[in-house]
Structures are given as structure tokens and as C-alpha cells.
Amino acid sequence: MLRYTIKRLLWMIPIVLGVSLIVFTILYFMPGDPVTMIAGASATDTEREALRASLGLDKSYLGQLGTFLGDTFLHFDLGNSYITKLDVAAELIYRLPRTLLLTVMCTVLSLVIGVPIGITAATHQNGFVDHLVMFGALLGVSIPSFWLSLLLVLLFSVKLDWLPAMGIGSIRHYILPAIAGSLGGIAMQARQTRSSMLEIIRSDFITTARAKGVKENMVIYKHALRNALIPIVTLTGTQFGVMLGGTMILETIFGIPGVGTYIITNGIGGRDLPIIRGGAVFLAIAFSFCMLLVDLVYAAVDPRIKAQFVTRRAKK
Image (tube, rainbow, N blue to C red; front, side, top):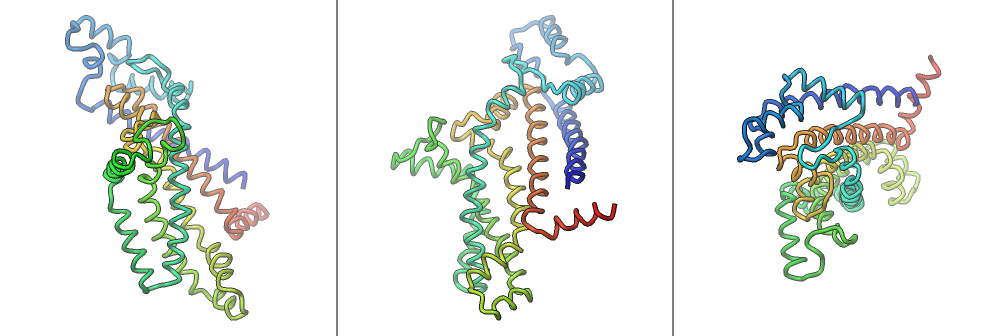
């Protein structure tokens, strides 16, 4: 298992390197001059050229790429913001807890609500409850999170005045963003759980357990659900990784100063290349760690997977 973990960690290097190369290339050839935005329209050509040289933007594509990759992977330096001059890595780490809290809340809500709903639909296959759950799941994956966010703000903040519309003063500020961000996850978890459970409950060992007189709740939640967890764990890990970067819109709407707001407002809005590139690399690393954690959870959930690693190690 240790060897497998090390192997996956090494695979993260080319993945993050590839993401860095793609993001840098896109930003380099994208129309628009960051120097013009930073210096302003009133700056002279001499001032612009001096600023360009100080930022290293006067170098060729390969020269800038080499500097960026060297600083990122050899010195672990994501650079400083063109505008604020603050360290990008430090800013991302400072804002990460807010994004992480919102991501965890969305993921937990997706699991706590979506999985039981999917189990209920599977145990009532082709019945009214099943059709109702599937209709609700289809509706959930079709509603844009930004549109739902605005509706929640209008209802619970403007009309009813129950919850704050934006900010990070307390946990109450995260309730509306968590609801808006978890709706799609709940729908996908329900669909995935239903599909996985339908495959398992038709298995011979489930029939045997029922024939032995095992209680139905025990059959469903102990035997069937445990064997159906692999696709659910995969979806959960993917959702968590996607939400780390997907909270950008939610953070912008609800005024949460997290990683997403930093990348969109300070980076993209201000054409601040170090923030955009650093944010992309940061999210790529975070997503890779999420996928590694999912693979490690596989062994804890399914003993057969852990047995494969033990068998391979014994043969070697």
C-alpha cells in the first residue's frame, strides 16, 4: 500500500506540470496586455516598457515559461501579485479555510441527503417513490447554482430576513451557499446510489442473506450498501475536488473571500497573471490529493482491494 501511495504521489508531478504548461500557454497567447491595465491609460511608452521589464514580460515565451516552471517546481514559489505585490501562495493558503469549509458543507449535505434518497429509490424500483426521486434528481442537476443562489438570497435574505445575504461573520453566512452548492451533488449522489444499489441487491449473496432471515434493514445498509460504496466514494471524491474550484461563482455571489473570489476578482478581473497561474496550480494539486485520498479510501471500504495490494507485495 505504501508503494502504491508513493507511485500515485509521483504521478502527481506530470499532472501538475501539464496543467501548469497549459494554463501558462493559454494566458500567454490570450489577447490583452496586463501592463496596460496595471499602468493605466495615462502611462507613457517608457513607463510601460520599464514596468514590462520589471515584471519579466519582456522575455520570449520560452523564457517566461522557464522562469515560471523553475520558480513553481524548483523553488515552490507561485510569485507575487502584479498589483498588490503580495505573495500568491500565502494569499491562497490564507483564503483556503473558507473555501474548504464551504466545500465540506456541500459534500456532507450531498452524502447525508443524496445517499438515503438513492437507497429509497432503489428499494422501491419502478414505483411512485422511485419516479419521484428520479424526477427530482433530474431537476436538481438541471438548475444552475448561480440562479438558485440568487433565488435563495431573494427569499431568505431579502423577503424573510432569516439569513445573511453575504459575508463570513458566522456559520449562518455559509448556509445559503451550502444549499445552493449541494443541490447538484445531492441529485448526482441519489442517481449514483440508486444505480449502484440496483446492481448489488440482485446479487446472489443478497438473496442468500434474505433467505437466512436477516432483517431487511441489515441486508440493505450492511451488506448491499457496503458493496455499493465504491462508485459512491468515487463520485464523492470527484465532487469534492471539483467543488474546491467550483465554488468561485458561489463565493462571488455571497461575498465569501475564498480562493475562488481571489482568482476571479483579483486574478481574472485585474489580469493578474501570477494569481491566475498560481490558483490553477494550487487547485490542480488539491484535486490530485483528493483523488489520492479516494484511492486510499477504496482499501478501507472494500477489503478485496486491500487484499490485492497484500497479495502483490507477497509475490514480490
